[in-house]
Amino acid sequence: MFKKSILTLTVVSAFTMAPAAQAADYPTKPVRLVVGYAAGGPSDTITRIVSDALAKKWDVPVIVENRPGATATIATGYVANSAADGYTLAIIANDFIASRFVYPELKYDAEKDITPIGMLAITPNVLVVSKESGYTNYKDFVRDLVAANGDWSYSSTGVASTSHLAAEQFKKLTGYQANHIPYKGFAPSLPDLMTGRINFAVPSLSSVRTHIDAGNLVPLAIIGRDRSRFLPDTPTFEEEGVSNFDLHTWYALAGPAGVNQDILLKINQDLNDVLKDEEVVEKIRNQGTEVIPMSLEEIADHINEDLKTTSELVKGLSIENK
Figure 1 (cartoon, helix red, strand yellow):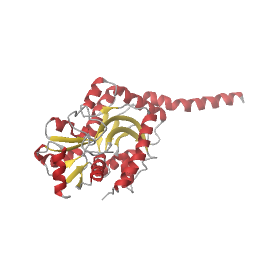
Figure 2 (cartoon, rainbow, N blue to C red):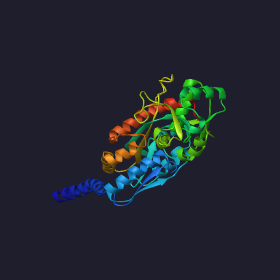
Figure 3 (tube, rainbow, N blue to C red):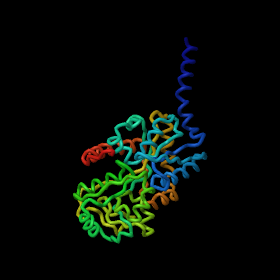
Figure 4 (cartoon, rainbow, N blue to C red):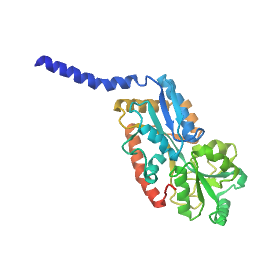
């Protein structure tokens, strides 16, 4: 009887220690970070900055894999159906939340099949036009937008993306009209936006920071309670008379459901460690984003809170996948 108890205790202890040991050794092989947008966009750029930093910390390759389309639901679905071992992870953004309300036939359950791991960065959205348009201020832009009487168009990174929600909310708050032209990410939309074939966009600042600095795109108004330190001369929509307009874009790391909690905790801690590195922070901030490290509990709370507000926003705007 006594010997059997010792054996049982030994077996139980071995099983209890196994996950912790796995987490301590993680990762032992290449890790993939799957991005739901084309290369060159903000999600891709920020992911590559983080992947390089994690590769140095982990001493294994961290591979960025682009699977664009359907507002990142293709990439998210791929990760949701991958092995829950921590070696295939996703970069998600606000559209991870919004997509569930406009894509009724998703091949995954956003609440049950994806586990948030950590926050990478947060950035405001900004109204931009091509320098070829000649606009230098919001009032002149609005004058001609109204005169166009619905003939103008705006680009987004896909149905239910933050750039789509921002433009639709702008339309609802002001009563102005424009046609939605979705793309598979910001980079593919850039040629049409910069040449003026698309009249305007309301993307994340991280999408357009370098193009604004280069003078190819002109910022006319920024969403948020305060002006951005990255664009101190650009007024907020509130300053331009558009009230109750508050929307931002965030980028986070996630994995499939079922990844061992100790491995999730290690990834979160290692991610937050590299996000404290001054060189990494500077590279990410150069995209027009603020680095916001979060614990596993904090990122879960953030997404749950966003779920409530985004649900109301999507329903209120009557956005459909069409």
